[in-house]
Length: 203
Image 1 (cartoon, rainbow, N blue to C red):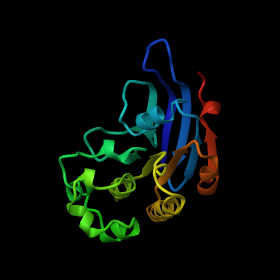
Image 2 (image 1 turned 180 degrees about the vertical axis):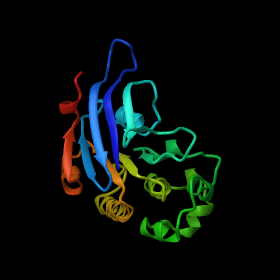
Image 3 (image 1 turned 90 degrees about the vertical axis):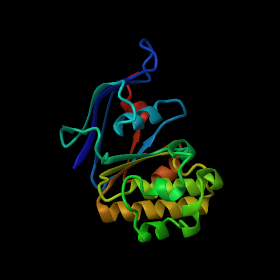
Image 4 (image 1 turned 180 degrees about the horizontal axis):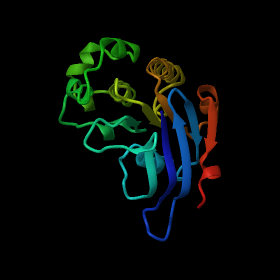
């Protein structure tokens, strides 16, 4: 299975593109790194590949087929700021199980404590919320995970623990992972191959 973004062009203003004719491909089980400076268009590309942004030119597909709206999206995006991706009026148990029933095994692997399930989002730290976001995203129907600067808010030890868990689950479920960051050392540790956005972006 392969996720492709072909000839992707996007800009917030008509005459000022931040992405131009970008081509990117991610296969099942692959861990691919994407490096780019702040403001280079990394997050915009992530949103396009995962269906959060549809005002673009080009095509996003899995094995040549367009991703169908109104179904569980096999391409899951986890944002840098998890507090922006949760409903503040829902308790964490409802947020966690919105798309699927998350197993106790995954909860334990991410270090999610049972007591946290009855809390509101504002009662958890950014790192704790991010664990929930990842557990929710790595469902049985997920085929690709796009991780956009997901561990910038945690210390190095927690960062390593989170990434070890992600890669273990991805290997077990044959999920393709796009690791998006400006941290070259992190990318080199985690990824089988590396793309530089400047090299594939024709702005």
